[in-house]
Amino acid sequence: MRLITSFTGSRGVRYPAPDVARGFMLLLIALANVPSWVDVDLARSSTPPADTIDTVWLWVRTLFIDQRSYPLFAMLFGFGLMTMINRRIASGTRAYLQSLPGVEAGREPTPQEEAWAREQATVDARRLVRRRGLWMILFGAAHAMLFSQDIIGLYGLVAVIFAGWIARKHWKRAAVLSAVIIVANVVIIFIIGSFIGPIAHQDATGSTVTPVSYVFNGVTQWAQGMPIGLIISMVVPAMFLGVRLADTDLIAHPERHRRLLAVVGVGGLGLGALGGIAIAVRATGGPLIIWAISFDRVAGLLSACGWLALLALYAGGPREGGDLTGLRRLASNVGRRSMTAYLTQSFLFAAVFLALPALTGIELHLGEARVAGIAVAVWLMTVLLCTTLERSGHAGPFETLLRTAVARSERKRPHPTPPSPTANAIAAPAGVSE
Image (tube, rainbow, N blue to C red; front, side, top):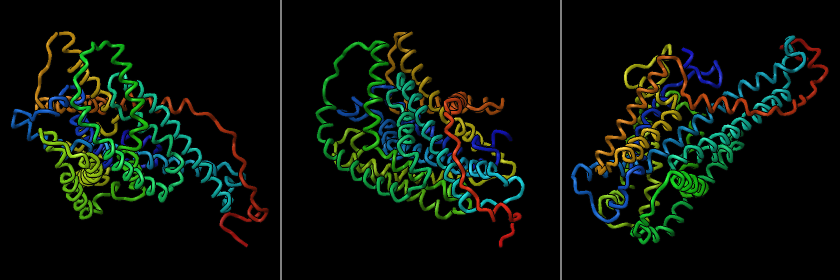
């Protein structure tokens, strides 16, 4: 039972839908990431895959996984942030109110005191999110030494920048910024898309890769990609969408919105697939259409909404006792240890595609479908790992490390001075007004 409650406090119920969605999302992440570990993109840019199975898989992956899994990741990240903030503000407000003079004796706090307590709790929540984001950037930098396309650092950067907006729920600002980013994404990618063709056909340098150069290049690419990712990716709009969903019961109680979620699920995946057709044609050897790149990214956000809706429907609402069974339980085990599972994927991919060839001298020449099979096997290994941790009653080691780092790096700010209650409020018994 202790693993069912949220780390933000014992009063918060742990809803199954976000955890189950994270667990399956990590399968999509593995399938989307594995091509980065094998040199298949260069071949795909000039010739179509020879195997029919590879061609079919490329269509499936392009229409339903690529540019779709990371917006889903961002939505779930935003949902988790807002849930943590809401619970932190609620518990912090209670703590500040209980510290007021006379409250323990039964005095009711004044409206001014209640507003003060909530403001102080909001400041604390904002500081928590920013501190957590800074540590995520550090975790991302370490991960980039192995995998240059790390996403933890970018999510941490987003948390640091927008912690105040999220804590104070500036929805209008978030909506305007999201719209600007979507438009900028379309325009910028359309402009730079004309350079992709010439760059894609440049010859490889053939330079020798050493461990030092691999780490240096990985961290450099990661650092350069983070600020660019804020503009030409759907991370920020998707994160804000997840943040907004946390203030509704669409994900917490999907059983109350079955029809709406079914429509969003089928419609989102359908529209997202339509938006990716031109990219799928390109992936299987067809011509590159410049406008299709930005169109596919926007369609990916729609697909992410569809995935989240269907996964929430599958997970269902809270159960008595909080127990899940079958595949839902396995996915939830992974979802509650998403950082551990995500980083473990990189370690396993590195073992298969970097360490194994280096130790044996055997180069792996695999088709798209076989590479996808390796990704599924890696995800299943993370399922086994997280299930073992669940049975032994342990959280994910990287989640524990992050929480410990965030807690120990907290700097106490000066204790704020509460507003002075009126004399009548102090003298009057609790619940009595003059």
